[in-house]
Length: 407
Ligand code: 7TS
Image (cartoon, rainbow, N blue to C red):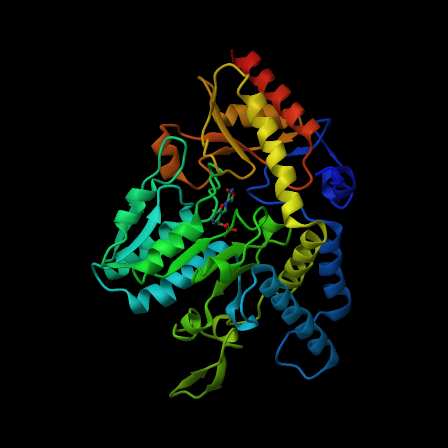
């Protein structure tokens, strides 16, 4: 912690150095999307200035360079997740597309009416709606594991919900609305004990928690590049090789085939079977650069810094009259979600914006979580590697200003 030089790190992020409404920008909407370091911007620019070509299909030099850069990014992701091989890393648009891929490829071919998919009460809509679509298509049953008032899963109830018809457990590693970090290793073990495969939604977890998919032994792991300091439009589906091999393609087109005639198509092997069409080449390269950037700092150092920010912010927030925290799990990542008595979160967000502070006000694509806590929305501040204790002070001053204006 002591040699964590946040001011030096901030200089790596050009966007942070600007004013909003005449105030220095305080960017605390990192759970929605994180800012990009110069290294990522440079990698994307270098690709478009020097190497741009379509991949896998060209013998010319640029195409080979582009292919190498794209496949190197895949290897970087494989090391980041400690996957067993590059074939287990599928580039997709983001966490959302990855979950839809699993629902439509794995789900649609393996599940039947009456089969169950088990999720939790704190899922993002991206890990609810694809299963509801499968319910429409197949007549499967969606089961929801409950949580307590702190936003922690009730583990006994969860374990009891894994039954003979459970075909998949799909659960968030870290909640975007509450910050709760779930005991995913224990959950995987409980599911596997009953032969149930597990999908982990790592969209919020990967920027904050070192992930080892082999140690977790999860069957699928998904995340988005843009929350990990990488570009939008790129994300990752990790799947165990044998499982991915047994699944049909999600989309058809170029690059995912070995041979096509009008009568029959033979699909390509992994990972290309799941990457139909020209992929987001620059996005993958940018994501690779983001992962290398994070590795150069160390995810553990980043997590320690963010935990210190969260502890400080929590302590300060609790001194503000009428403030109620939403999400007080013992295991929590850098997310501070709250409501102020009789003040709508949109008003909070608007006033904070006038103070130069970017927070998110809304349901955070987790409406069932809002329903559970009996609130229409929350205001959410979420921390990243470049946030400072001074910024937490500015946030708290801003919230006190809101209370004064509306109080
Ligand atoms: N899962 C979780 C836990 C998320 O937080 C999000 C995005 C997604 C899935 C979907 O990711 P996408 O990149 O495919 O959209 N969460 C948020 C958020 O909290 N505010 O904006 C997006």
